[in-house]
Amino acid sequence: MQIAIASGKGGTGKTMLAVSLSELLGETSMLVDLDVEEPNADLFLDKLLEQNHTVTRMIPVIDYSLCTFCGVCAANCAFNALVVIPGEVMVFPELCHSCAACYYTCPVNAITEGQHPVGNIEEYLLKNASRLVTGRLSVGEAQSPPVIKQAKKTAARYWCTNTVLDCPPGTGCATMEAVKGSDYCILVTEPTPFGRHDLKIVLEAIKLLNIPMGVVINRWEGDDAGIDQLTAQYQVPILERIPFSRDLAAGFTKGEHPINLMPELRDKLENILLILQVTK
Ligand code: SF4
Ligand code: SF4
Image 1 (cartoon, protein in one colour):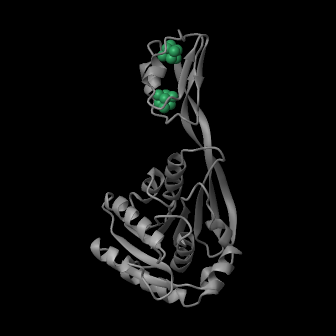
Image 2 (spheres, protein in one colour; image 1 turned 180 degrees about the horizontal axis):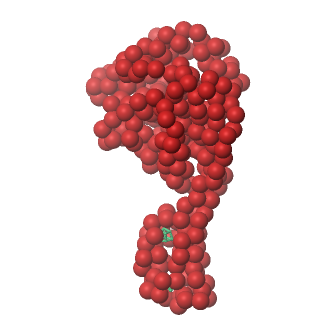
Image 3 (cartoon, rainbow, N blue to C red; image 1 turned 30 degrees about the vertical axis):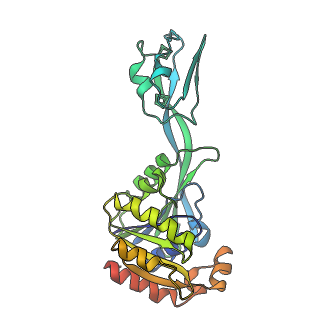
């Protein structure tokens, strides 16, 4: 089973839940950190780096022996990633979306495919013999979907019974790329007006993917702050409420394992797996 853990905003406890769930699922599970702009699941796990490879995406390379500086490529680029000036075709890799429109429309075939590095994929063996695959976007790069796609592809090479995906927060294309194809999506939120607001947006977004969803309320202090009404409206169950714990928050930021910091978390996670009918 592939379980995506997502949230409407950052800082809700998504990674804490992903790390704890994958650990509970044991050695035949895999954790994939798709929060590629700031991956941090590896910080909480005893790990051994086995492989680290670069992710690239296509950008145009101009053959100046053929180019006539006609400007057709720039006119066909929907992302303003090309500027043609006398004697030069300027390529802006950070704006390029690798759509290949310029490549196909150049009248003299003066454009070939070059590769631009955008990030890397780290493959770790964990202490409990399970695996972690981390996607990491390079500093200064804006487009995370190619790194997310490659991290998912890398994870799919391994046999495992259950995969837990730590997805990017929000509702952008990075989140949708990470969640799509999953069997279930757990949305982590906090019981505040902001949490409720962002949960509503992410519920709307994930609904488009037609994936079953459930909500986990983190840092719960006895009041759902209207999240119960919202989930009822969307017919999405509240899977669990994780109580607020200063010890958990403080220890987790220092890299301590959540289940060690809050032993009752184990029962709550077991309950979530039971509801999802996940077998270890
Ligand atoms: S379309 Fe081809 S020939 Fe025209 S400016 Fe672009 S690369 Fe050069
Ligand atoms: S590949 Fe697409 S986005 Fe990139 S420069 Fe060419 S037309 Fe523009």
